[in-house]
Image 1 (cartoon, rainbow over the protein chains, first blue to last red):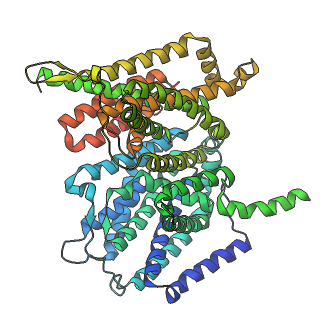
Image 2: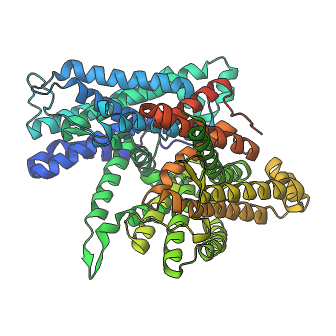
Length: 328
Length: 287
């Protein structure tokens, strides 16, 4: 499993910068509806980046990452009283910490497994969390719970869609900058080393279990951050947030963009969500409603990506310079 | 819980466990021999159930549905292996996960186009619709015994095939050392195709014979898939014997969990898995 473009070339840096600029000015031109949609994409981008830390950096193929996303959403739902808003400044860290703690506990079991086992076991544990909430009426059951009030954040009024948009954008930038720093920190280098050759890392004296567990917990906490924002935006949580489909979608976002550098995860999240909406909005031709069959298009699209562009959109961008050097 | 009730639950759990074994056996063989994670394995179960429903309601014959389904699933499995899976044996697990996740979407939507999104019941064939009386007011349906019987027959057949026949010897050789087996003249590509088609057929037939009991509904494959994964993890990848024991264990825990601890029923088997992982991280019978 090779990560793409750990260091982004100039041209891609420019693309990312341009994209961020576009995000910053978008609400000035787009309608409220679209601003809300883009805010949702940004939340998913944070979620996808957190998964990229496992998938692309550490080489851990987690198929249960949505559990932590959903748990933090539920944390907000439980912390919000029926009649008033709750302060963001302590509930956000608490929800992320709760998700991180859950990841620490689950990670303790799953990180000791490898390869196919890791995939199946992460998926199974996420399913366990799913059923915990699905089966218990106290925890909302299969219907889920409403978050009646958006968290209050002092100066920022998150009820205002524009403020929420910029708050999410700030979070996206913060998480991106943080993860890029982590990537090139000694900790991040060890994680990359584990991806490339775990046996060798252990042989030169690193406790890979501890590093992987730390990465798993950190990724869980950041997924929790995204899940909290999701619950705050939608005002509603249900077990589907922790479902298998959510985990697989996040994985698809990371792959679609190109893994291992976090910029790809952002690009992938936007591209995937956009495509999903686009497939669902396909028109009806005669008696056949194309949009109704979005699963077919999405399925075919995923298969095509895996067959023809396994390294994602950034991977496509990377191919060109390599060809040039081999022609020399 | 009195004795009759206990007996009924015990029979149910064995029957459920044997059904899980049909799926887990295919999964574990495909993992063990080709190294492929197949998330779409549950879809074959679902497609089998829908096929059983549509054929038996059209022709009135459940037997015909089973025979047709078994043949179709083998053809379908061979085609799928040839067109897609064969090219993914050497790819990383991530690609396999995504490919087969994409396939789940495709199979679900094809099912929705062909058969719609409604829930259907499948009629139990008349010969098997009786019940065996246990006490004055408790009885056990013959069909469930029939299900267990079919699963046991298939399990024995699978055991004989793998451990007693020449084909089985080649399969084991291929699982043990692919290159060496190929160098010694085993057509490993053919072996892979056969194993894959066998896995698809087992899952499809499992879906078909389960359909009268479980009814037929969209997404019925996903849940059974994840539980089959748990079975494979507990049993140890590649071990058919492990899959059988783990499937029976999961069947017991799940069935009795639903009766004794309904609030935790959904979670119990995952807790069982966690306990096994702590004790033996590679499963009970890792080969």
